Length: 94
Image 1: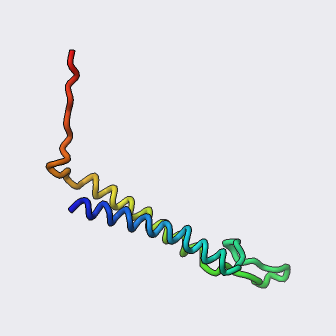
Image 2: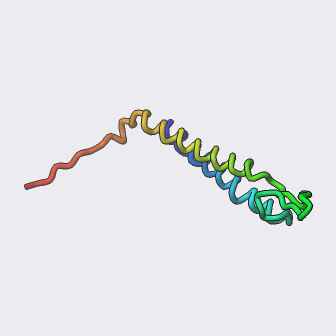
Image 3: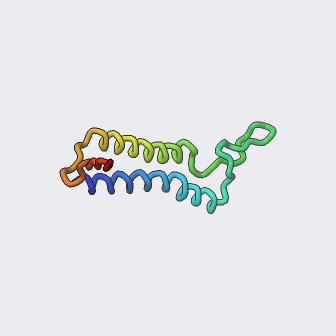
């Protein structure tokens, strides 16, 4: 059971972070929009260009991936070890 949870937590967190960084970054780059995270204005103060995807959305995906990793770490702290994975102790010979 823990192997399924381990794999799912790692896949979900990696997927969220990769989507927020790589995929949305590629979409932003390929769309030809400006690379600035803030709207670009001219001297009159009019907005001349805005990014296609808001930086808050990209940040939310990355933070969601980090939150999943944090929840996974908390789960691993409180979950008991399976019987086959017990801690073994070795004693040094004199």
